[in-house]
Image (cartoon, rainbow, N blue to C red):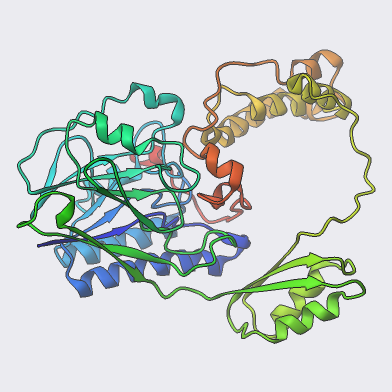
Length: 434
């Protein structure tokens, strides 16, 4: 019998709600996974991608990871992983650094034999590049074979990757797919052979849409029963910071006092309190509700108001028969400075992967500063503004840092649309190890 602890989407370093406490929560959840792995004496911890929230993790998050992986090493438990979309870089990966330190192993198309199982890995691949995949894996002679992969696979929600096609084209017959990217846990049998496909889900709530508890999977492989029938998947819960969801449907005439009373009916001590407001009641400032939650002990409070509040702001009069021209027209009317128009073009350029936009913008700002601060002053002329958005090529916007399905529904990987991390801790880049 071989037992694997399957986890994914730990998103270390995510400063959710701009809170240092939440950033610590993500690390603590990962540490609890390590604790459980050691206590259960599993044969390996398998991580299906998005170890980090950002491809430039801060130094404290790197140190915390090394300490956790060192404890696994001391317990003789291998850490086997693939690279997810959040942490992916064009060249070296942090996983490679940990492998050089002897703390982790990066799975790929050659087998990693572990007891009764041959393990293989498939990093996150943007949709635009999947047609080039050959799904060629080295042969094995183990009773079971497992593919660890990061992506949104059928038949799960928001899928954009055909699991049946992967299984049919793969040179190895897999008995189980251990998956990452979808933050909601799930398990299904797929294909003609009834292959087990399972998501472990995220280890911390990365979005208010993730209401269910967090956890990981324990996957057992029976050497005496080759094939999918010898695979057992079980769910294990993790103890994480409590999220309190307060749903309020306001009747006409009801307002902030009604919301405050609903909050007091919950135990909010040291919790993240998410207040969702609907109905026909009076409008109010979210800050008043958030203060009420903090007053009863909440660590963090956020309000989402789903009512249709009349917006008196003027709506731009544009035609979307040609959306690109509509955007360019609005940019022209914005009167951006030459530098602003340049940055707008950089951000909206379709030939730049989302995860690379920040670096491109930072580089362009530095170049513009060298030209003189006057380029940041005054409105850009028509020629400069008209150039914004002219660069049009086949998009790879789904590459690296965002998944189209997740952006569309903000559910499979909700962190892609959440607030940016404004941490001022020192960041370490892969170049520091080159």
